[in-house]
Image 1 (cartoon, rainbow, N blue to C red):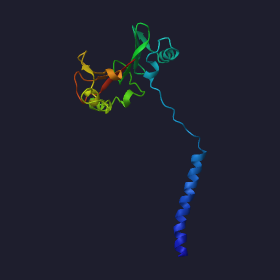
Image 2: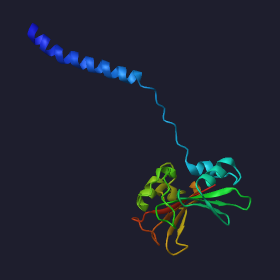
Image 3: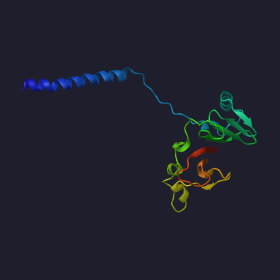
Image 4: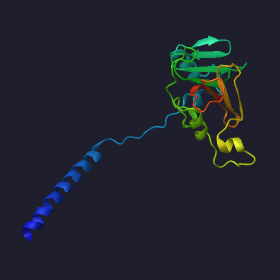
Length: 184
């Protein structure tokens, strides 16, 4: 019995030793806090073109001015300003859209440029919406939709301040996101 007890104790001692050593490693490593990332569009929307953060972004990203737009092609972003120079819409482009690189930041509502239309609608569903009075919200469907340029299908979610532009001229559940517009 004594030999059997010693045999089973060796694995227990090794396990205890490994646990104790790894616990020390965890205790001695510096505590890391993950800082939440603030989305670019949240920083820019509603701000003046003269705001320091907006000016810094435009300057550091070599953005080009075109009428009421700031085109930041290297970052995949464009800003539309109203007549008072307030950023009202942020355009986030997928790769090779109008010469823009792919926007690399977080997209709203956990969307991804790899999401086909059916996945976008699934992500934009509102399970708390009333099926009778708010059927589009319940199903994740847009409030308005169309193809104003006859090249891209635009799904407008007024309730979310969001427009998803797809790489298809019509409603195609397998179409992918071409660009996302976020409105203030």
